[in-house]
Amino acid sequence: MAELPEPVSHTVAAIHAAYEAKADRFERGYLGMSTMGDECDRALWYSFRWASAPEQFDGRKLRLFETGHREEARMLDDLRAAGVQVEETDPSTGKQWSLEALDGHFRGHLDGLGTGLPEAPKAEHVLEFKTHSEKSFKDLQKKGVKDAKPGHYAQMQLYMHFSGVGRAFYLAHNKNTDDLHGERIAYDPVYSMALVARAERIIQSPRPLPKAHDDPTSKAAFACGWCRHKPACHEGHFARATCRSCLHATPAAEGKWHCARWDKLLSQKDQAAGCPAHRFIPDLVPGTQEDVIGDDIVVYRLAGGSEFRDGEGR
Image (cartoon, rainbow, N blue to C red; front, side, top):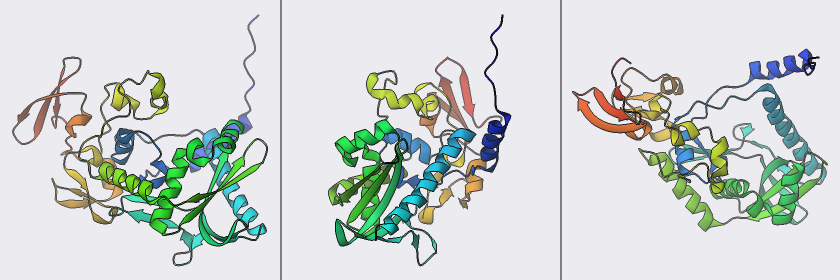
């Protein structure tokens, strides 16, 4: 007798579908300060250059993200209840605290600012809230945020650097037990400046930076396994054709992009759409450049031996 299929709740499926329907598919147009804990310069460059399709999350994952956002609001209330003076929005804008640098191409958003922590009543702190699984939370308690979550540590260092606030308070929530972990972090100017210099290299580089791992199957390269840029980086796939993967486009002032081919500034809608004059940055073609025909067509020999003429028939 054939086994019965696993029961499916159509109601749960409808809930997940509703999350997917309302999801914001807007693509980040800047290099995020929260991403600087990623070890791979090339992955960050690919993201900034829109070399791969944006991640698409299912309803379950989107609901999980919302759970994290809701917990942030609860932790703000927890701090207020403990006597901490919390500013979760910038009084000058009425919106979330926002930081930007490097001509507007490098940005971050604070969870809030807090004064009156019992450990340091007079010092102002950048506030950072994160939720953790049981395993992650125990590792955090054992090692501290700098060693257990270097990405979160880097994020706070940049927030302190650009806000001018010399301390941060990291409040972590254990999703399994509802336990909390609080940790004060001091500003490290040398480390922060190194992160800023790295971000500047990523933003200004006209070609991909070195990858963290040449062999994605090695034990050290486990992060390559879930990187959305793996097809372009390691598997010989073409990059996505947008203005940001084009030879003609460069980052400009005020977070904008400039097209040298048409001598115009590009909106984000323009950048995503591209145009018939698109010509790939050569490193984003999985082959070797062989020739240029006139001013318009670049000829490549692909890894399998076939010819690709960039600019012909597009």
